[in-house]
Image (cartoon, rainbow, N blue to C red; front, side, top):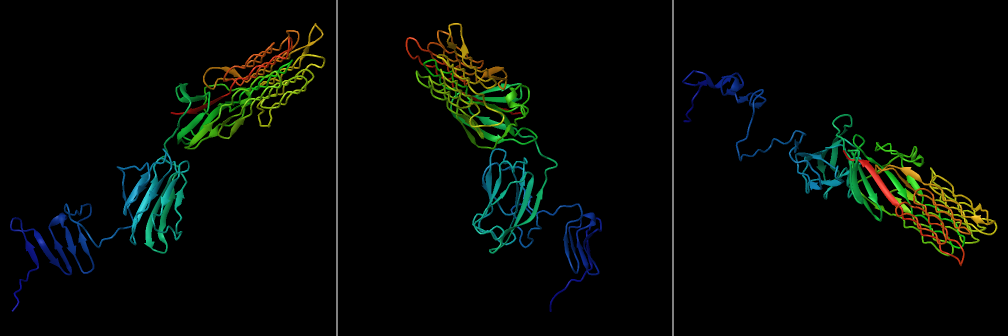
Length: 464
């Protein structure tokens, strides 16, 4: 015969409170407001409202499953490629560059992963979602890219056919975004007006952007790009044209005045990558027609080398600014190839009978034609003036044209901004101004024109 103990309630001896209480179909274990377990006909309730149900240290649970949420990993902000773990949510910070979140390998049905744009930088530096061997939305071998600032995505693994599906997607751009600023290396770096960095390149290099910033901080750069000046021509040769001069308005980085050539020109957006910088060399002078200068480049901006000065009786060469024509030679054209605003001006024409070279064109002024002189000959024309900018916090004139050669001893002056004077042998344009070389003269024989000055590239941005 089986023994039985039949009771409705079990009470504590000390205060007669219920330990186990039976009331109808409901059994309560525990006393008062701290009842931890309630069993009735349809449910088992653990804990109480406002209380905590805890597993003992080292214990595990099975059969409960997840409720469609993740545990957000707030103590580990992700900044580089990583593999997600089932049941976890991540904040991804791509301000330092794009990277990949790989989904869990060999997932099971019901696995869940979430990710959120931490600094609202996914548009600048994308987050790639790597499938890690599984499908994403039935897409086979295709990873996906999140490229909208403020994005949040939740993935559930369904089965081998569809793989991971996005079950929740949102974008929040209205709140929480923090200012981010351009950060870069390359060239000679100085700080001006407290909040601005200036990178100066006097030779080839790389402007390497590590953070592209955002609109709340900075995400564009102002620039000055000057090409190499042309080399002057000999034998009453023309002065050479200045290197092409291109700059932005300075509105994006404040606190300085650009030349009129930058009026209305927008700063350039940047991305987290390396931008190759080319700084044009000056063209060589010659007893014959000189050599044109070389181009300077940054991003989408190319400034064309200055046109060479001609040698009697040839025309000046076209370029950023045009070279002056020699004795009986036509002027070279500036702004070739054409850009807007213009990167330079035409050179001057040579003398008609019998001597004198035209001045080279400058960034803001056309080269002067060869000028008659009291001796009945033609003197060299003056070079055109350059443009002034204070992008590096020091007002500086660059891209002046070279002066033409003439006879007897009647030479054109160089334009302001590094343009060289004409002479018996033409002078050399100033280094890193893009100034044109001066034209050479005759007597006792053809004299060489001077070399052009090398160019320069200057980049400026707000860094804090």
